[in-house]
Length: 241
Image 1: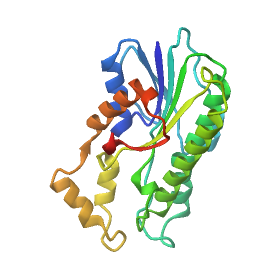
Image 2 (image 1 turned 180 degrees about the horizontal axis):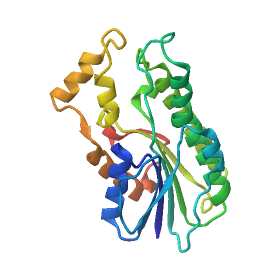
Image 3 (image 1 turned 90 degrees about the vertical axis):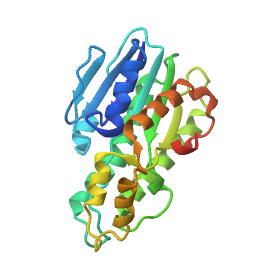
């Protein structure tokens, strides 16, 4: 049995990834970690969790399953927060962005490795990062920084795992999916020109059908996970694979 813990399965990439995995192999079991749920399937388990609530993350425990061949943690959930220049952003937005985009994944990774390090089955951590974590975008300071931190956390964990015996080690990846047609894009396009100087560019992406569908991204992620042994680095851009 292949078990996938995926955060943010209520919509967007997380939802499509869960559906793709459920449809691709009857031996796949998906555990969705989110505030709400839109999936009903015999191989889907929903754990209601607010990833912005640190107390809930600290209390989170991974389910234990028998006959596991592959165990995967996908840190997919993310928010962009207030799209405004620094000085105009609410304090709550900054806290929520870091909690969901950086702190929650870091805590879940720590728990995952602590709990499963010594198991012999294949173990993978896949973090959904962003190109925004690799270059600056005005009015996205918290989002850019939180995704950059997730990349660095992934690289450090990768370096640590290289020191672990191969059959015990955990593979770690951080993948930027590109510009994807998700609800986050709706939020970006609704920003004002005063708050976000590039808003017209993002409207053009939508109007000219330049956005990648969440389903297409999910299919590529499934392929990546099924062939993870050939990927030797940590940081990837899905558009280049």
